[in-house]
Length: 169
Image 1 (cartoon, rainbow, N blue to C red):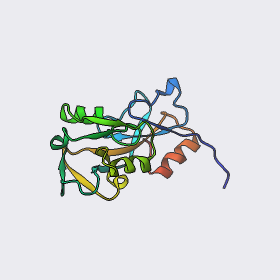
Image 2 (spheres, rainbow, N blue to C red):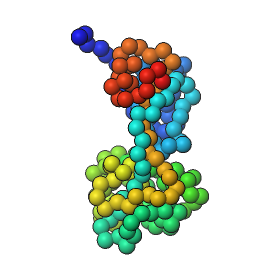
Image 3 (cartoon, helix red, strand yellow):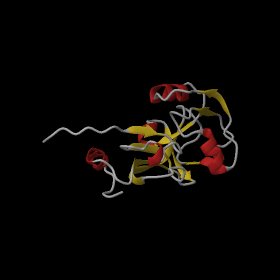
């Protein structure tokens, strides 16, 4: 088997370039469903999962959580590590005050900030860890998609296939 070479990049919501402006090989896009998308190329859903609210131990809420019921709670503003607060405000219509802003993307730091009581965070269920509340409403899904140009190179097509993207998308 011969070696293949491809380049890939992780993009945030709304930042995937069109093929004409630089989407040469492909990339992975992730974010809350309904906010993904880009101006060109093809997207294929690789995986999706429900969101969960990460809370400190001893938090009074148990069971499931309605996002609107938590809009006045204190949240961490950590757009590179959790669902951005602007996205939560757009989903519910305001609220979500924050006292701490974390600009990094390290999930361990985010978990420690939550554990220390600096606020709540919304994360994909698989990344939220222990001490989480499943989000019951609205139904928000964290989705990962593969982006590639209309005519990907063989290496880029193989990369997409290995990530589980649907064929021909």
